[in-house]
Length: 112
Image 1: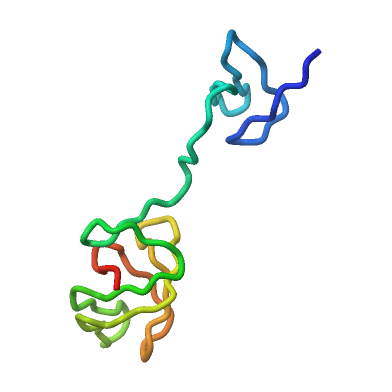
Image 2: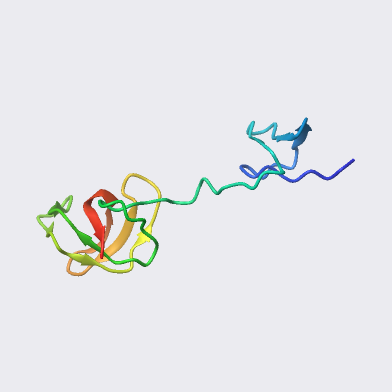
């Protein structure tokens, strides 16, 4: 019996071959082991102008943003350094001077 690779989605060892495709019975993922897979889970987050953002970038806020649960406001032009990209609705994790740790939406920032 030949050794088949585990499922790339759920890491199940119970994969089986159907023609040229490999199939996982646990998560029903199908893939061709001969094709080079593109990492679909890689974050492709873009700013308001369409520039691709990366961890560690500096961005500038393009709109006044109210801070939920506070009377503070993040003003237009506030520069945020060393961002971290995360998944979810608010896709930028950062620390803003004078306010603290925050999550921002990429649609309200531009790459500095």
